[in-house]
Length: 356
Image 1 (cartoon, rainbow, N blue to C red):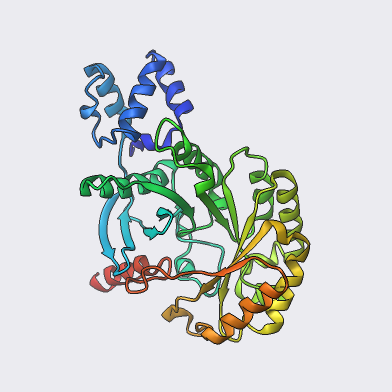
Image 2 (cartoon, rainbow, N blue to C red; image 1 turned 90 degrees about the vertical axis):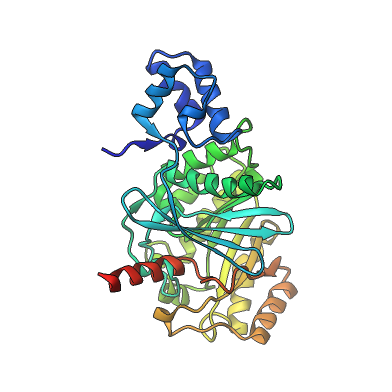
């Protein structure tokens, strides 16, 4: 049986594990510091642990469960990683160099079952959830990339927007968030972390009660049910009325701003009437909402869609602004390295299939 990654344990779980194995609580603190502050990659490098403790750890855990397959570096400094999991499945992780810091986009599932018709990630159906350890390891390997360069850089921001639906892997997601947020570890501030969902209403409500100050983003992509259902299958289960009711509940409980992600698809959801409908949809909550207009990255398998013209995007933006809606046109990153989420993984799998 494959050993689990120790990255998958929160600090509280690590403490409980040591106590269960008749070891003292402070051992967990020592191991935590080795993992997340000194960032060693072998238990044998934890030099203040006894030989017996090291052997106990090696019998039960591995540290890093990922193998780097491909690393692509774009002209703008964006870095895209293709990692192989222990079961040979592959995932993507992206590092984006922002004005405010180093942001990493992590993956939470192998494939995706949400079925958005414009998305490269959903081309391959969900195989399984990632463990918390496999999600944490994505951050750790990017941080090791920085450590090896020796320039003092650190991962400062996280977006959970890679392959998969994060709220469909809720428990592992929450363990991941608690681990990277721990102030005596990676210490990535909750307000520097954003989780994106396509709109799983029950989990939005649960997330409102988790106590973490983590940001929430919702992949909306349409201002009405007809358009949203045509491009996002999830809208059949959770139409806009149910989604907005959950948003209202979230805002009331947290008083935290929500970002609405909106991919601009030419002649599909980018018309002036769509902009006005979106403004009307958000008008009663505009103080706590923000719209992110996203340029579409074309995917060959979804050739029914094309990127909105710049003039149409600006017209859409202007209508939102005139209605008092806070919005921005997202800057693009990594356009020269398979920019669409899931694209690199999809290409690699196709190559492997052809080679068989």
